[in-house]
Image (cartoon, rainbow, N blue to C red; front, side, top):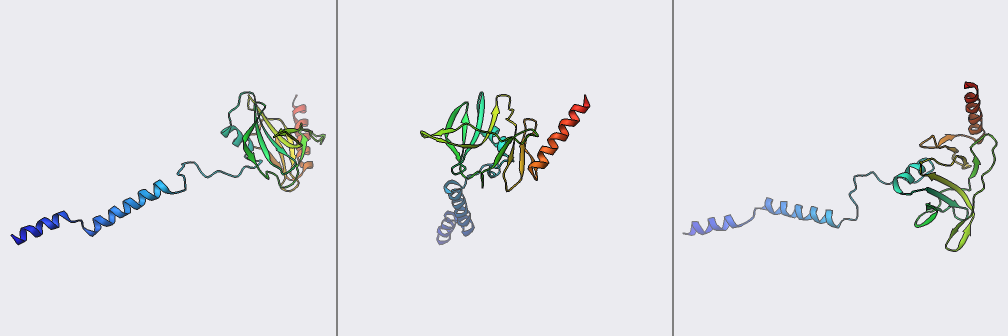
Length: 184
């Protein structure tokens, strides 16, 4: 009779290994549910730069007629306008380190003038504007960042072309223009 009671007790008890497995499962579940990290399959968000700007805008914003990325002179903050309406939920600060020079995409080296941007009843001078129309074509211009190179934005390119200097970019434009003219 004594043996029978001991067998019943052993059957009802958990082994040490079973208890450890339960503790590990509870801890893992707690970590997955209450952790601060999100488990996205996407890679981490890349820093927004001139190189990935067009791709970023097309991937993250929907529009019908025109999408604009505008940067103001005061603190180099940038905003989004979708179909002419300012998106107040989106703002990038310090997009540029210094005020860039923006030129028309031709060999004349003529600076581009932008219209002012009105944010919270205040007008700001715009120093940079990338526009994408409904056909996904961008305005064409040259950006001289004065510290990290010269970027040529063209509707043909998915990413801007990078040059070492403004002279190199305008010289390349002149050579390409001559080649096209000579082809006909």
